[in-house]
Structures are given as structure tokens and as C-alpha cells.
Image (cartoon, rainbow, N blue to C red; front, side):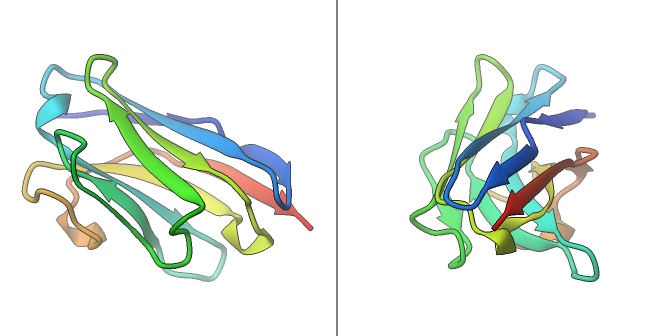
Length: 124
């Protein structure tokens, strides 16, 4: 069982930066693939980024590639999402998720554990 708690969301102007954190409970965090997803009102939950258990493999949605960076610190049981050059269309609730079933995945159905989400608002 893994419990995930996101933090770091908030209000930022377009062009600004935020760093989201996702703290995980449990001693097996380093064996989980992690992902970040987001959901804006009226939209389906969409993939943002994923990272393998070792941190050596990462993938990004095209819409955030070059602006967002996913990373993890297994010693701290934490995964991060550095978001730069934020745009109004990045505004959403951001969720982190964990999976032991995959090395990495863009598919939210393959993640077993989810955090409660953190709100990101981007003003234009």
C-alpha cells in the first residue's frame, strides 16, 4: 500500500514556474513507476509525465515537453514536477500516481495509487 500526498500547487502568472512534490509513504517507493497527470474542469484526466523506478527513463506529453521536468529522490520517497514557462492551458488539478505493474506508462488505468491532487492556476 502506498499513500501519496501532493503539494506545491498555487497561483502563478503565465511564464512563471512552480515545482510540485509528491511524497509517498511506505518502504517500497523505489520499486514504483511514478506519473503525473492533470485534469481541468470538464476535461478527462490527461497524462503529463512519467518516470521509471530508477529515474533513468522519463516520458512527457507533447504539450509539456521542454517546459516540465519530472524527477525523483528515492531516499526521500518523493517525486517532483518542475514546471517552467507555464501557460494558462496548464491550469488544472495535478495528480501523482504510482504503479508496480509498469516500468513507465502514459495510461492512467495502469496506476494503482493516486494522490488527492494539487491545484495549479495560471493567470494570463
